[in-house]
Image (cartoon, rainbow, N blue to C red; front, side, top):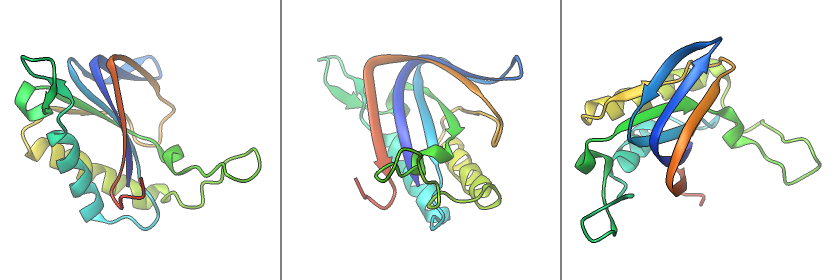
Length: 149
């Protein structure tokens, strides 16, 4: 499972002119599920992201986590994180999980974030979404549950 994590002052997802998920200060997370991923990958990423020290402390150092600052999290499914563009000009998505396998794992991720005490909003799985965010810092990290990078 892969994630792009962005520290934001606010973020929201719009589907067909309706705001389906919105947060204030916290993390906006694009989540991509690979075809070999399991529930343990979703749980690992949720735990990792909620505890990432990407917020400043009193000295201006990145020493505080989402839990420490009481921030929120907006999760958006993003199968294109598994796109492979090493060959040719059109990405291949053969390593991305199909929707029927990916959606339950995306839900495991969101549920685990909430279990850890974080207000979790989400986009709409499989929908065409407009994602708006204000990246703060900017702070952006790329994570992979199998630690490929």
